[in-house]
Length: 406
Image (cartoon, rainbow, N blue to C red; front, side, top):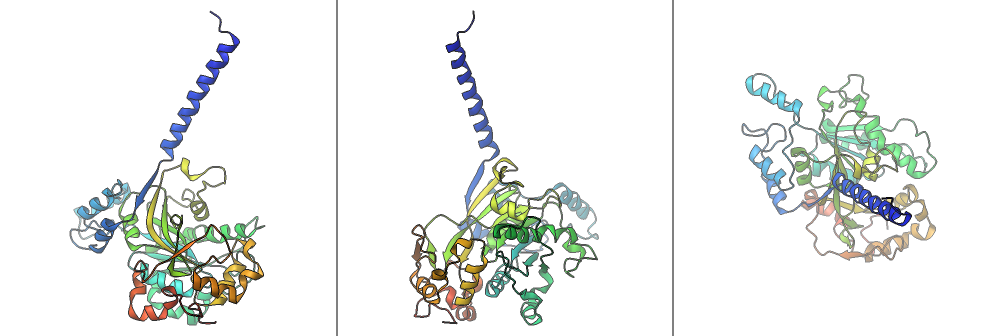
């Protein structure tokens, strides 16, 4: 029996539909994104951390029981790659040999003018991060010349307590196709990995901390990618160090504006990001990780290696500066050049919107809700001396909006 043209077309449509449904199902399976929330249970485990005890799992700093409990909250396994398993067995058999290396955490971020945020970040994460990879360039994203702060001996000395963990990197060269601000941002952000990680553990590394053998990355080490004002919660870092997480994790942030007094009413901010080290060539590059790309704008992260979304995993305080000058510098320096307009750079405009919680760029969709006596702040800001020093991050009331130069 020969199918007529009409029946043939119907059959074709049917089979094409089945094919598309199969592809959709496969895509959903591959790209499944786990949505989780950093809640009180994790905070409780974090507060009960045990370091370097005889019963501790030497790979992550928690007792094995606590590690299983922690990772189980997110349906993740306890992290322990094959290389470390072998080293751990060897160490148990011969206690005189050094214990296997713990999984390291590298915190990579850019520094522009934000020395207050550098102080807060280093103090907040010092007990949770192995190395701070601080990237500075001598130009802004808009190609304006700027100083590199940590090359100033006086500024560098202020952070002496953290020198043993800081890998300070000055961006070398320029990108091949730096036509736009976002191109320069990508090159500078990526340099924290592409120009730093190949040198780690090598005696000829320019940075003395990077040259130490202990700095050499091992497969599976945690890599955090963020802006300096996007700070992962310590409990989040413990989770990542301890568990076998997907290749791409969005550490979504509570999104504050101007200070911790103004909370953005929309969804959690989509950054920072986390991944793990897979070698120089295979590790996801910082900008691709941040933007959800797989090496190009066509192939997106959903297709490869799995991903997860952790909500309430970080703090983000956007445009949270002590001086009007820093606000102005950000506007003229960052990649969103469409906002570099005289009416937005005016001192009076900046102070008024910060005091009243209005949007800096008059965007109707951006709404901020006042939070009285907010306790959801980094622990470092709760010290009495820090409350005074960083008052502008906690309270923008007053005619000067908390700015020290107005």
